[in-house]
Image (cartoon, rainbow, N blue to C red; front, side):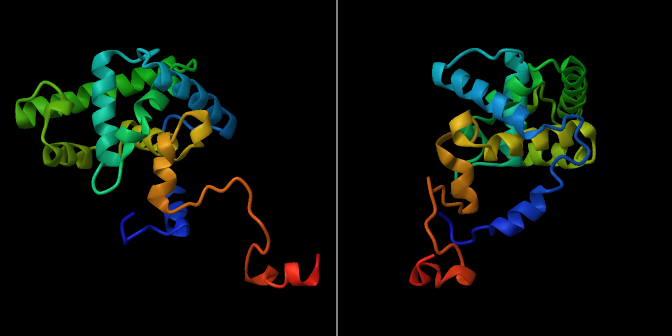
Length: 193
């Protein structure tokens, strides 16, 4: 784990606006269902249920720039693309079409600026430049939201493969916590309560 860990409070504060501008907002049950489906798809190395191979490569590349792999694992290692596929496959044709249009615009930018047919073919710096130019769009807001949701979802439901997201924010995933829970309960055991 790196020394410059993001505190959980700082992470939650910065992630609280993750859904802002997104065309998809998920409830906790929807996230859990998508995580379970993505877990099964990941375990079986299944084909994507909705995304084309091109869309999967492109969305995977975008997610990998949103939470990149560096000295810690990123969205790629967490299997975020399966989460995105399952969310979009949950009767979200209109949202999928909006993301397709946004992806086409991103690919046009890749072609015009860098003579590349696909976003995933660009160098990381070029990808970052194009994503910076569209960061205020519903397309980017939606992909960012889905990436974060897939990265930090409960591992037992398919997101956050190998607890990568938990490690990234320094969360200790214990099955049960024993008292005392904090300084205000420090004398809990001593009092016999």
